Length: 293
Image (cartoon, rainbow, N blue to C red; front, side, top):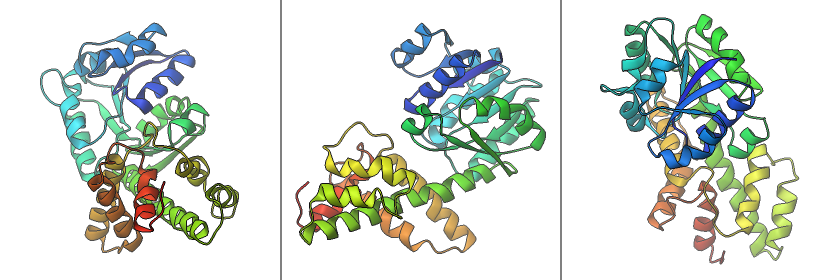
């Protein structure tokens, strides 16, 4: 049993804590809104009143927040994570931010005598609940070796990809395909539908065809439903697409399908769908095609 901390108990973070608790670990957690964490407290998670209290209490602290601004908010200041770190502690940040921002934070963590790895994940809340989440890790190899057993309690596939920031590079390179695939899937469904094939039939065929990635298999049926609670909303998806486009500009890698897919996310935001799952790119294309959802 490990002495762990977790900051950021949103949809994904809370389910990760639930898995860690089920494996017998002691977890101290913090979230901006305590009420969202009550079910975890009822399951045995210890509540902390600040990120600093979490990192001061735990040997290994995890965090999963929405963006670099949110990460800075929980890391900096007198009540931030950095203030609680000391020699020998480890910080495993699972947020998706730019590699450069992550490396800058890792340097600050090391100034405190602790160490940091970036450990973003690939998968959705369903993947996590089914025990199929994959984790990428960037940082010092010896630190990775220490946190790997804990990450395996979250997901069965944990891959060391290299130095700090490189796991985030890999995550961004992975995530750009999500929106691209969803847009291509939407094109196929709408082309079939307007040719006279029932949408349900088109979705069934495509989700059982050679193009059916795991993401298409679990998100494709969204086009048959009214908008639900977002697994990964338009704003979050566009954040990752913009990170990818910026990396492409810096590394001289053209990303044409990423750029086009990003414009559909912008259109979704313009249509008031920013908080819906990014699968609503189907709705955007459907409106352009003269097809009612």
